[in-house]
Length: 374
Image 1 (cartoon, one colour):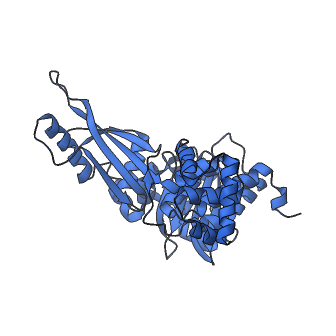
Image 2: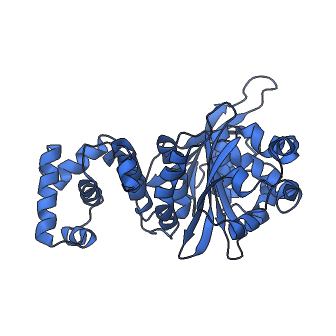
Image 3: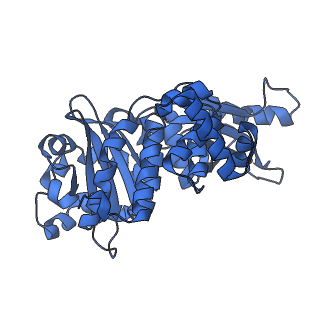
């Protein structure tokens, strides 16, 4: 019996969905955060993260869920290639020595017994505060070259990872590597639910920010998160000049000094596009009141990713899902045929069958139906 035949129907469908996600051509720094989120439905976990490997198998970049990334400045300043050696292998050592693709953290990295490990500062400062107790790791490789480490984790009190969890992660492995390839530069971007709030002074100094805003601000101001760039992060959050200027523009608007533009700007880097908007929270009109400005930050996402999420909710086969997404993205039938590896006439038949299944009669109606779900 093959390994795939031991999977349930829901598991096979979930794996197929993750594989399609990895093949959207989004680029690693867009695809990885989406994949980490989607993995929760396949392998229940509390906190997932990924570390990219550089040419010398050093940590070239990192992304993590929740407040994981807030701990990275401390990690790079205190533990990376330093105190961590007392209890675990370094990232580079792990990438070089690791043979199996899927292993627990204690199998692949921990060098001491559990009691010694749990008494060390690495565990108590880097893992325990973030609910990271059990870790199942995937070494992502392609053509023999290590590309990074993907970790899914559970907290104390959760069940430990099973052999079945390992199997499920192994099915994702080659596609996770494929997701790291550079993405298209002409992707249409749309609104997402990934947003946060910053509270600042008119001078552009941060008074408070939500956990989501802290993460998004870190991403928006750092094209990559490595040991070199984390030194700046460690000095505390700050508004880049373009965003701080929005606060000044807002003041000018209410002083009738006509700024050059509305108080909105967008920063773009490999993590995506980030839109910042400024508005008054409290203009400080009372005696001794401190005026405060709210700055919202939203991470835009590729339309292809949003359409993928909506299409995966439809009762379609894998081939139909691919046709549905290509049609919704406006791809011509000739390109759809090429992508499917079939003749244009066969592609047209696929389109007609899809329309019939969804109760629409044209590409325009299909797009309208999907957009109604966005």
